[in-house]
Amino acid sequence: MRRFLLAAILAGFALTGWASQASAAFAVQVFADTGSGYSQVGTTVYDNGAGDTVGVLGVLNASFTTADFTVSVATGSSKPASGSAAYPFLDLSFAVVNITGKDESIRIQLTDTDFTPLVSWGLVANIGGTNPSNTTTTFDAYATSGSGSGSEFDMSGSHDTLGPFSGSSYSSTQGLANPATAPYSLTSAVTVHFSGASQGSVASGDADIRAAPAPAGLALVFSGAPMLGLVRLLRRRLAAAA
Image (cartoon, one colour):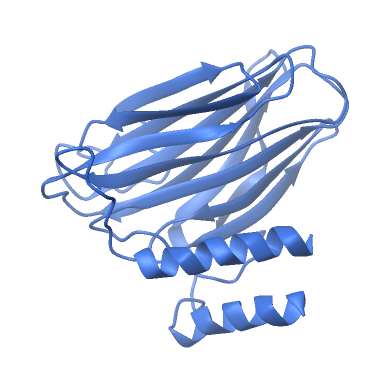
């Protein structure tokens, strides 16, 4: 029954033309640092490309593994599945499993490009999640325009940091300066640092950069909202079927 429902959801996306081609701009990558600097784990995974296990345009699902860690990008979503070029909603749902209890930092980066100017709206960064003991999580949100605009994983523009968070449960919201010009790119970078964590420890959470209307406090309204509901349903069904 679960497989049938998942297939039906994916088929629905395909009928709308969303499961058709890869997106060269929407991608995720993972880095690990044992104390001597970050090095990439595996290769960059692009939307509907090699390593993406969900054939839906605007939705990424991928896993990265080392001898000591398993990093799961349960769902990364962006336009057209969530938000749009005019009203972005870049969302990263993650889980990091410390298999051996090794002290190490894991950095997950999700990016998308070619966003158009925001009119009477602003950008907001949000994160919430849980940490095991002796672990911290930090969220860096980037919006980049001007020189290098449109380049994936471009982190030279406006930047806000949420964290580090050391509590077992955490959440935070912070405004992100609007890009000066468009098109612009967005990049979410979540860093999980283990120091003295036990074997099998799991750090998980959800981080996003989204458009929010001004003044603050109004209900979020953005293009693609109906499809975001389907993305969240797909995420729940994937987790239930695992």
